[in-house]
Length: 147
Image (cartoon, rainbow, N blue to C red; front, top):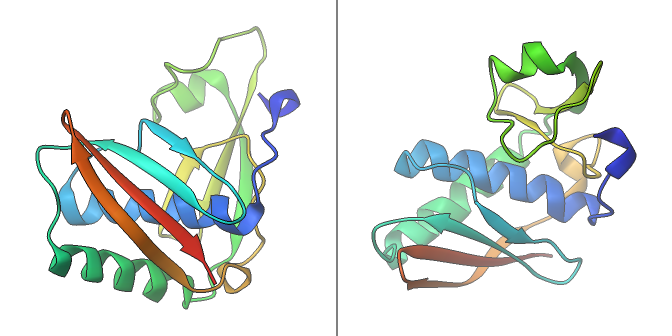
């Protein structure tokens, strides 16, 4: 997994992790099933049952920014495939013998399997802004940027 590290813009990619965890906490949904992470703007797609309200958008944005403002340490942990499979959904990965799985931890807020680049502290992210939200065919799309 480490050999295939994605070259995402580290602040945006770390913000995506925080957005995903915040979505899970606010709406009890799964992490995004599809995303596109760019330096200028990004998007995450969620299996969802409706469009979220303007009040929910504001609350979601506020919670993400509150988490960023906590100056949380971002670190990685390497664990065995067997250990990771007991904790995480690894269905998107191909198993190989002696495979090491990389887990990214954002303080005590979020932990997930990931091969992308990240900041070392959330104070490197900047201001998170949701630019638009759409809903179509049971997919909630959230577009966002950093200032």
